[in-house]
Length: 65
Image (cartoon, rainbow, N blue to C red; front, top):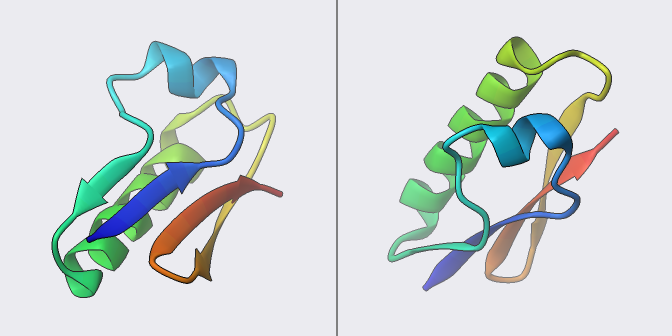
């Protein structure tokens, strides 16, 4: 199992219908979902923050830049 973790949940994230601490069966699926989340967060949120993706073991961590 692989996890997608949002390190710090900003207000835009909390107001969205996105979820934190998602578990996914495959690494490829987790990476694809995490990249989609980062792109959505960078494109549709209020632009106060930017987000980046880092891999940490069996987790993909979305961090604020």
